[in-house]
Every structure is written in C-alpha cells, then in structure tokens.
Amino acid sequence: MNFSKLLIKWYLQNKRDLPWRNTTNPYPIWLSEIMLQQTRVAQGMPYFMSFTTAFPTIFDLAAAEEQQVLKLWQGLGYYSRARNLHYTAKYIATELNGVFPATYKELLQLKGVGEYTAAAVASFAYNEVVPVVDGNVFRVLSRYFDIETDIANAGAKKEFAALAFELMPKDNPAIFNQAIMEFGALQCVPKSPNCSICVFNSSCLALQKNKVGVLPVKLKKVKVTNRFFNYFILEDTLGNTILQQRTAKGIWHNLYEFPLLETEEEKEFEFVATVLTNEFFSHYTITGIEELNTKAIMHKLSHQHLNIKFWKIRVGQSIENGISIAEAKKFPFPIVIHNFLETLFV
Image (cartoon, rainbow, N blue to C red; front, side, top):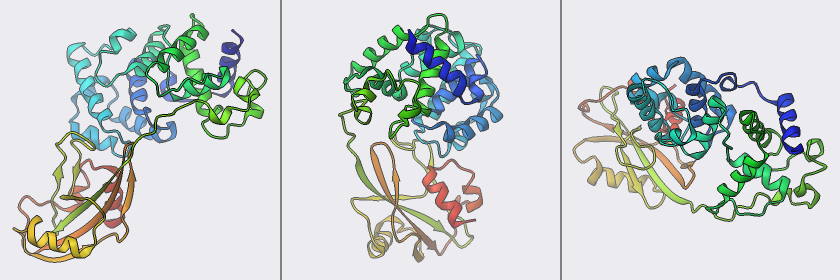
C-alpha cells in the first residue's frame, strides 16, 4: 500500500541514529523498550548508555544488586519497571541460559513485558510479523484514516493492531514498526504538528477534515490525588542522619527516603513542631527545627500530585546506625529527594 511505502521512505530519510536500532540483539532492544515506556528518547538515552556500560550483557544485569539497579534508574520514574527488568534479567540468565525467547507469545510471559514491548522485541530482534501499538501508532493511524474510536476503550488496541497488521509489509515488519513510531514521535506529534511539510498532507483524512487537533479520541480522564509529604532530615551531634526504605507496595517501592509524615493538607511550622515533640521523635532530644522549603515542592506522578516539604530536625544525641549525608547520597532515592539533597548539600 502507498501508505507503507511513503512512511518507510520518510523513515529512511529522517530516522534518528539510536544505538538500539543498530542491532538485532534482543538484550539492548528489550532494555531500550522498557526504558522508553512513558519516557521520551532524549530523557531515556543517558540511562540506556549508563545501563549498557554498567551491564553490557544480560548476565551482568542479572548479577547486580537491586540497589545498584535502582540507583542507576533514579530519575527515570515508574520504578516497578526497574524491579521487573532486574527480575527478568535474572530469570533469563539462570532459567534460559541467557537466551531471550524468540517469539511474541513467549516474550509476553516475561515479567514486565506487555503486548507493546513483546511486539517490539519480536519484530526488531527476530523480524516476526507482529505490529506494535503505542501512543504514536494510535495518533498516526487515527489521524490518517480518521478513526474516532476512543483509544482508552478496551477494544481499541485490537482494532488498531489489525489495521497496522494489514498495512505492514510482511517481508520487513521491523522497519514498518520503527517507521510508524518514529513518524509519530517526530512528525505527527500530539500538539500542533507541522502538516505543511508532512508526506501525507494530500491524503490524511484528519487534515482534510480539520480534525488533526481532536484525534486520537481519548475520553477517560485520570483522577489525580493530592498527597502531602513532610520529610524529616535528622542531624545529630556527629552530623549524621537516618534513612528508611519504602517496603510497602505503591510508589517508590524499595527506594530510600527520610522519615516521613503524611498529612491531609500542607502543614506549617507550628504543627510540625508540636507533632515532633509529642509523637514522632519523642525518644530524641530535639534541639532545633528548620523549615528547609517554605513552599511545598510539587512532584507530579501519573495519578498523584505530591506536595513535599523538607524539615531539618537537630537532635541532641547521636543517632544509632546514623550515616553521613555523603553516604546517604549513595542510596537510590526518588528523584525529588535526590534533587533536593543536591541543592541543599552541594
């Protein structure tokens, strides 16, 4: 079909030179696809380079400590990806002798690998005829063919996958999948695409009908919860502090943080001072409380907005098992805590 030929021609002329495109080795392809879920290429590239330097093979990643993996992942977000990545690396290294599954259906069995990632690895590494469907593919196809299906609906992925499969050249599925994703990332962008230079501007139905700005259709709205975190950075007579690990399921699982008090609203100095002396650190002699940021830092996650304040709490004795701030910085933190520490303790 003319669509596929034009798309692939555009791709060969405009594609970015990305390291995971210059190989059919499933390890870097899988690694890149996991990293680029919910992440732009420009943000993910430094992490990919760090990971492939630290862990050049699946065996190296499998042998790493989880803390090292989380530290390298720090700032990339959606940390369950990193934990699943590490789990799957250990599984492939030990149970499969380091050999990746070679089919879409087998790849789907790996932890942390969904339909999109399985399709990407299967087509890019093994040239299996299976379409990828991500946000870019939804956008390109819905605009070109004027498809008003709500992409948040359960059946939307199946509909778009069937269309992509029909369009895909069966002798080279990998290049089609790369091309349609790249086209969505570089040309058919979500907001204000430059349709005047688009290779499809004479045949795109959304452009003809003035619907580029309303496609794809996505009606479901994500409900956002506001949460209020108060972090207490203790400082004892030796200048040491204390950390705790988030062991509960949920955001930032297995990352480290300072002692936390979550409240129903943003709190001021007087409240925190009262809570600390009466409850939170009653076993310490508190010699000083300092509000380190007068305005809460807003940290946005997909379903939550965290309003974060940091408090320095000086105590009049040494903390048992306390560590220095320099030592604390070596632990994997949520990026908002890491960035605050970098600003506070240069």
